[in-house]
Image (tube, rainbow, N blue to C red; front, side, top):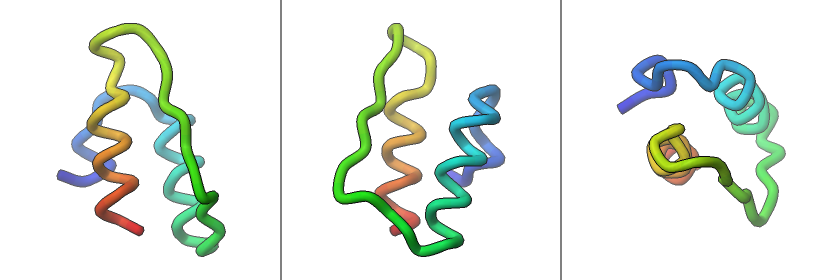
Length: 50
């Protein structure tokens, strides 16, 4: 799975990609929101791309 596979969440995807491109990844990220909004896919992508 890649960031392009996630539908919606454009701002969140952009920020995560920018953090990884700049190699400025914080020691913790909090993903919050209602059920089904894409928290788990974005968290897993962040984990695999670090």
